[in-house]
Structure formats: structure tokens, C-alpha cells
Amino acid sequence: MSESIEDVQPAGETPALTDDQVDGAEDAPTEDTNNGPDQPTEAVKPTEPAATVLLLGSGELSRELALAFQRLGGVVVAADRYYAPAHGVADRSAVVKMNDAEELAALIEREKPRYVVAESGVIAADALIAVAERGDIEVLPAPRSIRLSQDREGLRRLASDELGLPTVPFWFAGSAEELSAVAEHAGFPLVVKPVVGAQRDGESVLLRPDDVEPAWQRATTAGHIVHNRVLAESVVEVEYEITMLTVRTTGPSGPGVQFCEPIGHRQVGTDVLEAWQPQPLSPAALDAAKSISARIVNSLGGRGVFGVELLVQGDDVYFSDVRIRPHDSGLVTLRSQRLSEFEMHARAILGLAVDTIMISPAAVEVTYGGADAGEPSADIGAVLADALATSESDVRLFGRPGESDAPRRLGVALATAPDVIIARDRARRVGTALRKLW
Image 1: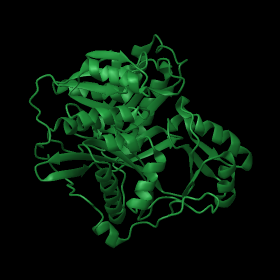
Image 2: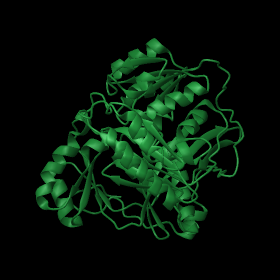
Image 3: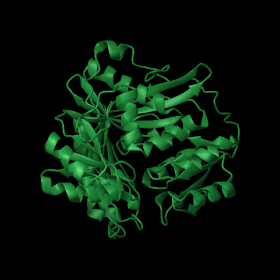
């Protein structure tokens, strides 16, 4: 497939999977065991009473993951910038620059962990590859998946060109002029994303020619990483945006994957505002979603939870992105499943039995704030009393966002119900009450 921008041809405009492709899509053994627990895996010997787990990334989701590892006997070292949420619950903490290979190597040498777990989208991947090659420390989910998760061009070409997964039309541009040519050919609106760095900081929607230059500048400096490539995607009409949480394990008969029930989500930019489980899909769409998820996850390799982002229009399903760690929309599993996404991730990494059993329809609403959000108001008791007066509700408060300029999660509102519609309504009521704190 040509990579020429001058031709301005889509780098990936593959059709939705046919029934035959869906039937034979998986490249490695898969195992869909929503109805019961998996057998213990044998890839890792979960016999160390105090295996040290180094989390590279210590945000709000890492806080929940740290607790999951600790409940399984792990000693957790949380690494990130100052005042990171997971620092408050970890056994030890470290302040490092995630994209500084020397700092990461020194930290790993000092802590000598059994497992190094990538929990950030901006990590010096080369340093982790070097650690993995030594053989005495496991880097998870896998060095390959960590590298590709930070290279959207490599990931998209893997999905479209190598695996043949259906995607929306996309292009790559190496200058503002090339991006302008892409926009002229593809039309507006057009979504522009950084090829490396933090997508949250660098994503823009182009609505007119005047938007090209600001979008280029924003994408090429995302996350304080300067680079000269961007990804541009056409905007297509879809019914749903979903996340397929896919758990990859390794066992005596080889690798296998399990799927959680589809999670629907609503987001602005890259921030998930609301998520619910299950999201009903047609049988054909569900089969396609599982097939796409299995193929990309098996190609990335490793162990753990992967959040595969998909676009659904009728029976057609399109690959959008994949996270190699617990996903924002997966916060709903704190109440919808027997094991949350954090518990599944920890178990898979440690080589323990995992299941994806859903116990109730549920929904979550996320509240964000910037560095100026401050402490919760003094009437926290009254606010919580109001929020938790809603039936089958729960909350998680993450505290202050610390020194980050980007919006961070301040808290989440959770609710269960006999069906998703009621659960979403309850979560919205809880979220409305919770926002009075800030």
C-alpha cells in the first residue's frame, strides 16, 4: 500500500469484515468464557509471596490497579510525576520522567521488580525493551505492545495493512502543507491526532481550512514531545462507539483471549464522560467485534487487559484504537462484573485464573477537573449523602488532579439497575450531585 501523501489516497479504507472473514479471523486460539472462570494459567509461577510490581504511570486508573495487585499479595512501586494518585496507596513511590530512558533504567535497577507494567501512554519504550531482553524482569503487557501503543502510525498500519481490519479512511501527513492537501481531498470534518505522544493533548477536529495550521501545531507538540507526523481520519456516521475489554492470558495450550460484554461509551475528544455495560449489538456485529479484538490483541501479544475501541454501524464494525491497559470506559466494571478490569489485569499479569462474568447492567459517569480544581468543598458529607441516596449507587473520589495541566478524573459515579437505561439515569443523577463538590 502506498504511503505517498502526494497521491492523497486513503492509507486505510478497508471494508467491514464479511461473514467468511469473521468465521476465520482469529490468528491464535481464543477462548470466550463469559459464563465461567478460566483455568489457572502456567506462564507465570504465582508463588512469590511478595512479588514487586513496578507501575510506570500512576494516574487514577493506576491507583485502582495498585490496590488490585496488593490484594493479591504484590508489593507495588508507583512511578510518575509528583502527587500522582497511585502514590498515595502504593507501598513505595518514585518521581520520574516517563520518557527519560536513563531515569527509567536507574529506577528499575534500584527497585529490581519482578514485573514492570506500562500504565502510561508516554514511556521510553527502548529502555523497557532493553530490560526485557535481560530475561530476569518481565515487561508487561509485552515490549512489542508497549512500543506499538505509542506509535499510532505503526499500530494503524498493523491493523489495516497487515491484519486487514476494517478502519475508517485515514492518512498520514508530514507537514502542515501535506495535512492541508489531505483535508482538501478528504473534506471536512477531519480528525487529526498525534502519531506519538498524548492523544488527549493533541487531538483536533478540522471544520475549515483555517483549522489546519493550529491542528498541526497542536498534534506535533502533544505531551511536550516534538515530532513531525500526524494521523488524519475521516469522520463517519456510526450508531455506537464501544470498548471491547479483551483479556489475554497464556496457558499450557498456548495463548487465549476472553471478552467482556461490550461497553458503550460517550466521549468528548479522548475523555470518556459516560459508559455503560452491556451495549446491545446484533449477532453479526458482536461476532465481528470479537474477531477484530482477538486479532489485534493476539498480534500485540503479552498478558493483561486490552481496551479495543470500535465503531459500530449496523452489522459493520470498524477498528479505531487499542489501549494496552485498563480503559476509562472500563470503570463501569467496578460494579458490572465479578472482577473489575483492574482485577482482571492484575490476575492475567500474575498468571492467575480470570473470568469476565457480568453480574449486573451498570453505568458510570466521570467528572473531570484541571489543576485549579482544588480540594473538595467542606460539605462533602452532605454531597455524598445526596449522591448515594440514589438506588444501587456508588462513587469513587480520586482527590486533587495534582500538577497536570490536562483535565484529570476527580471522581466517578456508578450505578447498577435491572437494565442499562435505568442504570444510566441513576449514574447521571449521582454524577450531578457529585459535581457539587468542585
